[in-house]
Amino acid sequence: MKRFWRLYRPHYRETRRLALPVIIAQVGQITVGLADSMMIGHLGKTPLAAAAFANTLFSLPLIFGMGFAMAITPLVGNALGKEKWQELITLKKSAFISNILMALVLIGAIAGLYMVMPHMRQPDSILPLSQPYFIIIGCSIVPLMLFLAGKQVAEGLSNTRISMYITITANVLNIIGNYLLIRGHWGFPEMGLNGAGLSTLVARIVMAILMIIAMRKMPLLHKYSRLFPVKNTLHQLKSLYQLGLPMGLHMFAEASAFIMAGIMMGWISETGLAAHQIVMSLSTFGFMLYQGIGVSTTIRVSQLTARQVPALVKRASSASIQVVVVMVVIISSLFLILRHWLPQLFTNEPDVIALASQLVVILVVFQLFDAFQIIYSGILRGMSDAKVPGLLTFISYFVVAIPFSYWAAFHGGFKEQGIWFGFPLGLGVCAVLFYFRINRLMQVQLKQVKASC
Image 1 (cartoon, rainbow, N blue to C red):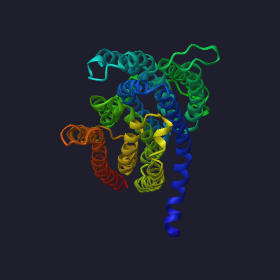
Image 2: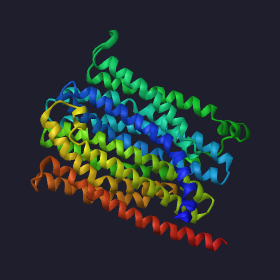
Image 3: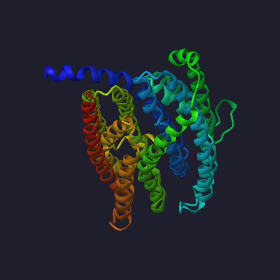
Image 4: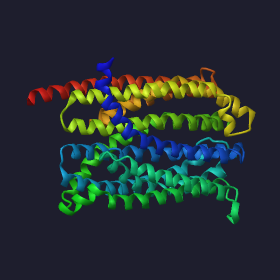
């Protein structure tokens, strides 16, 4: 036991150092999402369902953009591990250029989604509310992609605190904006659901501005920016797109199961859509905590891989898995114990509360699978492996999870609960496939190191 602790203690400490700021920022972000849902939920069931539909659609370009930006971290971490300072400075500039270009593409996708919203067989009562709200939050994709460029560069440099401070600042602004604009306090106009959207847009603009300022003042980047000119930006842009597009598709495929679940829930009932939004907010809380460990894993694996120390890569990965299992046990236990009380924070509708408490039980079942696939995904990103994981994710969700959810809901007789049955199955398959992929890559890496000795 003492030997085990001696081997893993440095990895626990480093994982905690990198992950804690990410987790704090993620919890803050989720707190804002929960506050949004609570404030909107008290406007009534219809506004909550309208927000659920719009947020579900917006998640399509948002998740792809986030996945695309994640390619920046392993490339920066690799350059740092090899002490290639000129490459590092070029990567910083390329990161912002690539994300701006991707934001323009995503704006086009958002416009296309807006056009098809009336044809998605959702309740007629929610469309007049969801469409203007969707346009407002859709505009926030540009500042958000600028923020993500800086965030991923900083994380590749093992600095996870910058995004934490900026995110917390923006979260406070968002909550204040919700209070002022949803109900029209302190002389501000009463904008209802649109007020929540405008508050989100302003907060994300502030995030982008603060991140650009932080990048200009970051000591390491500032130091080497003066020593090395930016060169071969086109080559770095190509590398970012070659890695970023598969990562974006990977994240997109993963999120699609949940997004499709929201759309299918709207085919059944408005009550189901509202309950789905509530439990998804709770699910996202757990996801973001595990994602914090996943981010730290990507950072550590990318840097250790660059230094060609496969034994440490394996040990750092194992430490992350051990930490996240403990987190799952604690979080799932709380969800299970509080499953009848938590939905009451969002709504007073008895039918929505009853259905949401049932969905929480399914949420508890798939938490462990979700945590494993998040950590495994972080390991693969750290190894700059994207194309195969993207294919495995597509199989897990589009071939397994979504079809099973549809069958369980509309042919198996399970209705709203059946839509959620596909999640544990898809996440479990994905985790197993990722596990075998990591083992394969680690064996290859070990052979390469032995061959070079």
